[in-house]
Length: 103
Image (cartoon, rainbow, N blue to C red):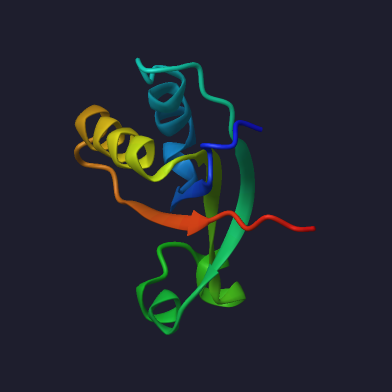
């Protein structure tokens, strides 16, 4: 890992946007990105009230997708801006997390 990559940009979004988000990430012009992608369950009191499917109503959660990119804070801002330009209508929650060195 590059020592300047001291953050994780975490992106959480609806699973139906997976192809568009990954295409946008892979098209990032500054460098070739690699990232981790996992399916997650989003739990919220609003989920039960705003559930879109019977599965969501019964289970109480919504299936979402989470992608994590190891980066630095400045590149994370540019990457988030790139995503907003490529997918202006997409609802993507972005979080920037510090990476800690374990000894």
